[in-house]
Length: 304
Image (tube, rainbow, N blue to C red; front, side, top):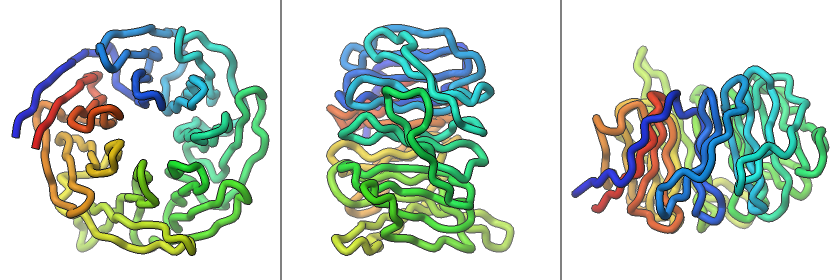
């Protein structure tokens, strides 16, 4: 196995948000001080917006080229144009910092929640205030939306993993997680498969696994397999665009897993330490992009 570092950039502060635009060409980075955009095919910086006042904590890019990025202290979601990086609006309404933001794949609606927040907020790109809010009566920790946009996965702290239909906003499936804790959740881009992190404390020791499951036509959660041997807490994870691989980011580095077998295919250790975010290049699953809490932005090429 070989690894090639194709791009390495040292940013002035930690990477606190990272996302790739749906067209696969633009990488958006949020830090404590600025927003940045890079052209992935050439790895060149397209623009930088230094209007960040209180640290970026989440971002998403919709198909229309709108960037929605949450700021920590202001509790605002800023709206930026992906071509220029200029701010074109903002959303107010969060009571807590907006730490999780997802976008519907086909329409301009964006869904967000905040740190220590029990509510989901639904936004329209053309309006400054939320269209509506949904209260789950429990802290919402993670959100993920299915490739078709028909299901929203909502991870409720210490309670359950719920799947909400986005046309009716009714819960159609639910996985009770007590006494376990669920971490990051994500959908595979090519199927109804999901992956979610399970954290179990036994005898004073903490064990992390990734559960793979599928949502069947009757909206039943069907287990597939368990990925074991995770090196530490999962900071972030992402599927490759072909759905064959799952990458996980850890303080100790990055690992790549075979989705079909659950086996580890590759790992990047010391060079990728403090990885906080990980993404596959949408156009080439042998490329991985990592952003670290130490301010390192790296594009890796790996081969099994």
